[in-house]
Image 1: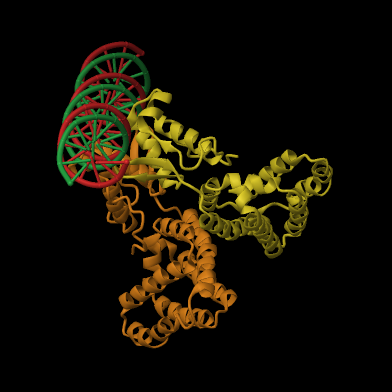
Image 2: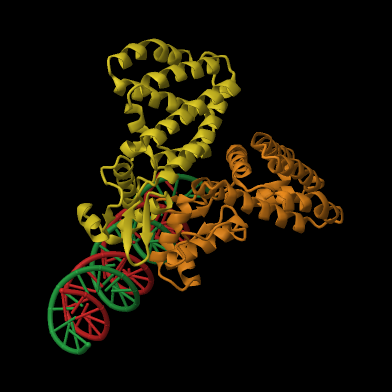
Length: 223
Length: 223
DNA sequence: ATATACTATCTTGTATTCAATTTTGTATAT
DNA sequence: ATATACAAAATTGAATACAAGATAGTATAT
C-alpha cells in the first residue's frame, strides 16, 4: 500500500514504531476507539516510553489518534461526517493528480493499464477475483501519483487516504462495485491515453463520487 | 493568521513550543536552512530536551523542518519546485473550499464582503494601503473555511499554506497585485452571492494561478 | 443506601542520565 | 602543504527517574 519510501524516518526507533502502528490502525488491526497505553506499547516493542511517546506524537499529527492531555491516546473513531469530508477532499485532490498525470506521462503510457482494465480484469472480476482488481487499482494509483510529479500532493493524499483506508477497501467489496469501477476506469484511461486531462479528471471524480454514494447507502454496514 | 483554535495541543509544553516555532518558521523569523539545536532551544524555553524533541517531531510531521538521524534538524528550504507544487495543491483545494462555501452559506452571506472589496478597498489600495487589503483577504478566507464545513480540508489547506506563507505575502506586495486581486475577488464574490459555485471556484482558481504566474516571473526576488 | 471526601494507585508529562554517533581539532606521516 | 589517524568534544538517541494529574477504591457522614 505504501507508495514512496523516500524520506521514511525508519532510522529512529520512534519512526519505525510509528510506521508499524500506522499500518495497524489504517488496517484496523487496532480498532477505532482503542486506548493506546504508553507503558503497554513500550513493553511490546521492548523500548522506553520516550520513543513510544514520540511515535504517538507522529500519529497524532497524522490525525490517526487523539491525545487528551494527562489522559492518554485513543485511536480516532471514523465519524460519518469525517468520512464524507475525506471523500470530498479526495475527489478534488485525486482529480488534480489524474489531471497532471495525464499531461505529464509519455505517449501511450497508459495503454498497458487500459488493456488490463478492459480485458483481463473483466473476466477475473466476473469470476469473483476482487483481489486482482484491487491490486491493479493500487498499481494504477501508484503510477498516477508518480506521473503527477507533485510530491507534496502525493504526501497529503496518502495521509488522508490512510485515515479511511478500510472504508475504501470495504466499498470495493460491495456487490457490483468492482465491475462498475472497472468500467469507469476504462473510460478514464481512454481519456488519459488521448491526453484529455479534463475528461480524465472528470471521470476520476465520478469514480470517487460513486464510491461516496455507496458509502452513504451502506454506511451502517461499512462503518 | 490562525483560523481555528479547536484541537490545539496548547496543554503540553511541547505543543506550545511547537506552535511558537511553527509561527516563527512560517513568518521566517527563523530563516530557511537554520539549524535547530536541541540544547539551545531547551535553554531558550527553559525546558528539557525531551519536550524540545517532541516539538521538533511535530514540526517534522508538518513538513516545516528536516531531521537527519544523528545529525539534527534544519528549517526546510523552499525549493522552486516545491512552491509550484504547493500552488497547484492550493489551486484545487481552495477551489473546493470556495465551491462548498458558496453552496453552504446562507443567502446574502457574502454581500458584506462584496461591498468591502468593491468599494472600501478600492480607495485604500489606490492609496497604498496593502495591509487593509491583506486583512480583508484573511477575513474572507477565514469565513470561507468556516462555511465550507469541511474540517479536514481546512486542516490540510492550513498545513500546506504554512509552508509557503511568506511567498503569499510577498506576492501581495508586488506592484499592481493587490488591485488585480481585489477585482478578481469582486468577481468571485458576485458568483458566490448568486450561489454559482462553479463560477466562484473558477475565479478562485484564476486568482491562485495568477499569483503563481507572478511567482514564476519574480521568483528570484521572492524566494 | 447514597453521596462525599480522602487516600492509594495508576498513567501521563517532564527532567535527568546514559549511550551512541558525529563533528572538530590535533598530531603524525608522506 | 596535504592527507590520514586518532582522540576529545559536542550533539543526538534512548532509557531511567521524578513530578503531577487522573482514576479507582474505601471510609465516613447523611
